[in-house]
Length: 186
Image (cartoon, rainbow, N blue to C red; front, side, top):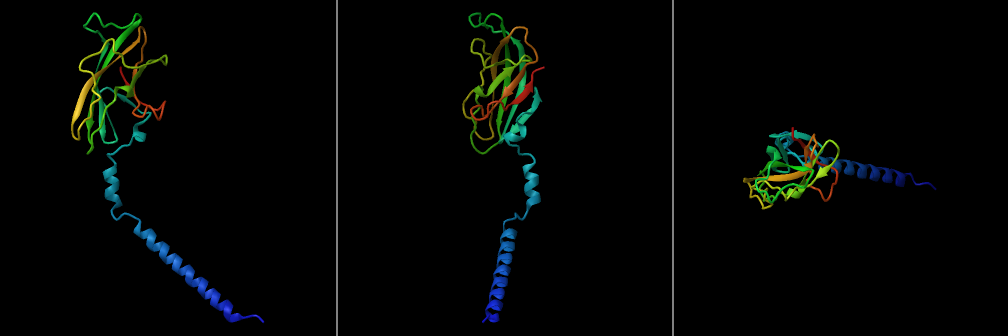
């Protein structure tokens, strides 16, 4: 014979389990929400990650802010004439010097890296920093303490007759080739 009491018991048990699950889920979902999300969102508006500024174009004097640092190209010497006659660019080249300032806005030390910087032209040529003509002081690779800044020059040798130069910053040059921040040098 068929036992109706057993079916009623199983339905009640299933209903009870279902209600317990719903109650538990609603408690956990309400606990995981931050209490002051509006205040947290307004604090994050001034914080930018590298992903926020990558593939953007800036001008000389524009601050580039990401990952608790501010980087500004403060001036350019185009062409840069090396005062020492023993250090001249290769034939068919000239030098461009760019002054860069790093400001550490974090609570830990940061380290600028001149290998993060390249220069490109309208023809698509890219050039790394030059040591044959180097404006002083050269941008240091020393750590910058929290709240401190450093400023220095990076010099590039480019082809004579080239134009439309852009400075390219790629802070993750080992991980993400081709992604950079551009600074117009006009």
